[in-house]
Each structure stands twice: as C-alpha cells, then as structure tokens.
Length: 323
Image: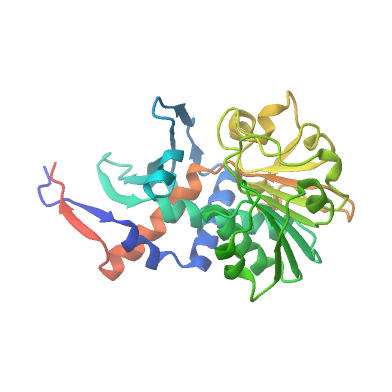
C-alpha cells in the first residue's frame, strides 16, 4: 500500500492569491457547460438547520472526464458577526475518483465568493440588456461586493448604482469601494429603487421579499443570489410568473431557490444558454431572472484549478497521508 501519499492543504491566505478572476470565470463557465452536456453529476444537496442557529450544507458531485470528485461543506452562521467573523463558512475536499483517497483540502470561503461572483457575471453577460445604465443592489456584504464588481466589468454602460442595507443606514466602506468608478448612493425606498433600475442584484440572507413585484419594469434583469435553502426568498410573490427564469440547475432551484415558491415554473438552465442547446434571445421588454443556488460543479472546477496551480507552483502545505 502507498506510504508516501500526501494531502495538499490550502488555507485561506494560500487560496486567495491563486484565485485569478479570469481563470475562475472560465472554470465556472466550464462547470455550467459540463452540466449542460451531462458530463458532470450533481448529487443531492444536504441542507440542515442547527440548534446553534446555523445552517449546514453539503454540495457534492463528480466530473469523470476531468478526474474530479468531491464536496463542499458550507453554511451560514449569523452569530459569527458577533465574533467579528464572516457568517458564511465553507470547506472543500477533493478525492481521487479511482481510490477514494483525499487529495486536497481547501478553505472554501474565498472560493465560494469568487465562483458565485463569476456565475453572476455570466448571468449578467448573457441575460441583461448590454445598454443597462442603472443598477440597484440589496446588501453590502462580501457577496454583494463581488457581485457588483463582476457586474460592472461585464456591463460597462452602468453609470449609477443605488444600494439598500438591512439597517436602512449608509455603508461608507461600501460606497468608498465603488465611488471612483460609478455614481453610488444609498436609498431606503426599495420598490422605487427597483423601478428606476435596469439591473437588480439581491445578495442578502434571503429572509423575505425585498420589494413589490409591480416595481419591476419591462426590460429589467435580476440576479437573485440569496435563496439557497428551503424557506428562503428575496423576490416577491408573482414576479417569476411574468419573467423568463434561468437557473443553474432546475431540480436544485425548485428545491432551495426562488423557484421553490411555485408549483410549476418553466425555467432554462444557464448551461444550456452557454452551449446553445437553448436559443435565448431577450426582447427589449423581457423581465429576466437568474435564480442562483450554486452548483457543486462550480466548486469542483474551481477547486481543481486551484489544486493544479498549487501543485505546479509549490503552493500550500503538504502533509503525509499514507494508506
């Protein structure tokens, strides 16, 4: 039996320098394409509420053609804010599909942020009107920031950003991060902000509808990020009935995404849009929604890229893992 096997460990500080945004975007795009071509499998999601007030989940899958097998254990612990820490926590483990032995353990916090931001960018690039000039975003946390950053990269016509916070107070740090590139201002009337926007991003914990369905104007695109657990939602009742809805995975979105609130909803998977299996042509007056629940394949393709870069560049910590 091999006695010289090693486990590669990538801590948070070791992961972040390896997360090249362009490479992450390509890895996430590959994940959606592999899903569309049925070359990657997504296993059933585990998502459970804990007595501690946290939510714990496992997303797993494999891509046999790429030798990828693994899972991400992740969740949301709101009391971490009281400790001065991030409530979202994630850890990724990759395995050798031939033997079942672990090959790489990765701090998944930055990976989750980056891969979700990349997915949002793909949604904006392929679903939003390219001439969109006004954006409204709910939330100012880590995910809100990466969503806005990636969106401004793919929709350069945006010149005005309105943002809303849970406390109804301005966020000076958030404004400072984007003020040099766009006009940004804090607002408190959610429906009015949505009505005045071409693009809307919802990046909150998903505690309930954020605005009125009637506020969404023809031609608007929405990236809905926060609903990733049964019982969560950010969008108002009735909105998806009058929208063209795109999801990362149809079954998963129906179980834990915005689509869970509808008995039946016609949706299109983003991978089918990227591969051309579905011809998606947006009319100027279409309301479009990207219901983002997060695929295990996104985590696997990005983690596989990280493991390869780390081994080639001598990054990370190697620990003996004999068997």
